Image (spheres, rainbow, N blue to C red):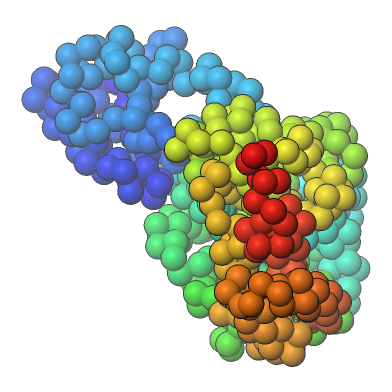
Length: 520
Ligand SMILES: Cc1cc2nc3c(=O)[nH]c(=O)nc-3n(C[C@H](O)[C@H](O)[C@H](O)COP(=O)(O)O)c2cc1C
Ligand code: SF4
């Protein structure tokens, strides 16, 4: 019996993985070959999807990208023994894209059958939760503090400090909420983890519940992720049946259960207070802070709100110990970061590595430059509210502080590449328009400011040229007002991409001579 892996990750399915899986089964039957097909998650090498793997005595061997009509020739070439073929990529783990990474949160994604509890356990699953349950809750909190883990959802707030606040808050009822709204442009790590290793998230949330004294958990997943929702719901049922959730988790005395909620389809529902409103059944609008959710969150109770990747990083902190997690990274950016490489890039996908690599190493090294083969012009880091970095600014190190020092941010680790045909004036306008469309409407600087922002950018782009400088000054004023006066980071950060265009790509707004762009 030979095991063949064909991902059922939705990115792989979108390029034909289901057809490939059917073709593998049909071909095996035709040839009388004894094949077990496993639908794993994706390894994150998206340009090679569908990536088919076969288990050989020497380890797993990869082929890709495979189309259904390649399958017969793959069998002819000895697929089941890892035979040579034009699509052969060699041993999967030795592929240079994977071999250079340090996967902790993504350690099992693409490796295991996402809904096999046995596979999860065989690959280290629950070791973090077992370690946590053997410790007093306060020690778990201090371990997470000591690891230096910062929230991976956007703001980078220290996870352990948040947990400590919830743990020390009064009240018999506390909640753990996972933010899986993943609205940022170019991001897909939450989805891939939910589809590829959902038990990892449940394990991280159970650790949090033990640490802070919570009994109920919610995962808020965006409605655009139907596969992730289905996989997660199945995983919750399986975990409950296995005694990993519910009353007396792993016979420890902990009671903790999880409910999956599907998002309302608005970017602002990813903002944590807005997400809580949405879970409570109301329209997703932002709540003023204070009070912070850690003290008054879901239904007014102390609540941990963390991103999928933050929870999924926690088991490694407990199994390896906080010191070994904290030993990875640079400055105050500790551990590993899951980067998502997208846009006009030759090799897009997931890169999990310890903090410290530069944007150039990511885009040119891992990504192989643009897919179009043209020069890179701009790279947006951190989603729609993140800055556009110019081609000569790619040596910036991808950590929280260094990105902030150049007017950018890491956000959820989304990296979107643009070539030299990109119109950066249109991108600046898009940032304002995005805010105008997605604003929750609660505060004036954002609700009105973003609409005015679009008008001012239009005036710069299409109005009389002698008024352009004055309109640019007005745009700067407006950006300052939005940054200082907005109630949440939606309006507060929209100026970031706009200002980066003003600073680095002024020629596309007609503010600096085009000569500065192409050197002529
Ligand atoms: C407009 C806006 C959208 C956001 N969207 C998300 C999101 O989709 N997922 C997420 O985890 N955090 C998102 N955040 C950040 C959350 O408010 C919150 O900081 C985060 O979920 C906390 O988890 P962490 O500490 O693990 O990062 C968003 C924030 C803002 C202002
Ligand atoms: S900044 Fe925008 S999204 Fe945030 S509270 Fe104000 S109106 Fe709502």
